[in-house]
Image (cartoon, rainbow, N blue to C red):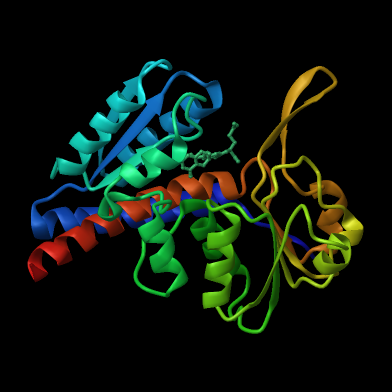
Length: 291
Ligand SMILES: Nc1nc2c(c(=O)[nH]1)N[C@@H](CN(C=O)c1ccc(C(=O)N[C@@H](CCC(=O)O)C(=O)O)cc1)CN2
């Protein structure tokens, strides 16, 4: 029987666990880990995600610091805010909600955040640490996917994992994490030939391509675990609906476990941000003691 992986329930459990650890951290060190979230403009989807991040921060017992900047803010003003947050000892994690308006550079902002406070795990230093197997702040979406996979499969070792998509934010870090878990990893992308046949070999299939219903049932091996990272808004009968990169209904009977959209990977991304903020505070404290 196929298991529907309930990302919302698992996210609740993770945030509860983080809340307990944050309480112990506060008690021991008299420090409340702080997460600064920066939203530029008023894109409706980004506004929802930021609202949920603030709500989850409160549930986790973190200190939530919010900055809302107008859509026409200059790169220099945004850089100046990040610089101030980098220097603020009460801020342990900094997250700038992406994507930014077109006149601003996502990459420049990612690189402006101090690596120690990079709770998104997007900074090149964090990426390098992950690839080389050092303690790292790991991007939240792949981290959430790994937690889900570890819950479904006690030993990932030797499994063939196929990741669809090669973005810096999901595809590449996901592949590194699967490799660390001793999977045999294949990344497929827009230039890959015979993508269907490669996907069909996967024991674990992670779709992070950003194309609605891209993965079809005949691409999936019987009994595979399917993780759908895509969150695509489509119109069905004149109504807005969210669908993943995977044709969930059609693939469900063929998978051993599968994540739905909504209610799968999305909520785990935010839960892992809470976990990363605590991890960042712990790393910073350990570094301060070592200095
Ligand atoms: N700085 C960052 N920007 C962005 C990230 C990120 O990790 N860091 N990821 C995405 C957006 N994102 C978090 O920021 C995110 C997207 C979706 C969800 C989520 O829970 N989705 C729900 C559906 C929500 C809805 O109804 O619209 C679900 O899948 O159940 C959480 C976080 C890009 N930007």
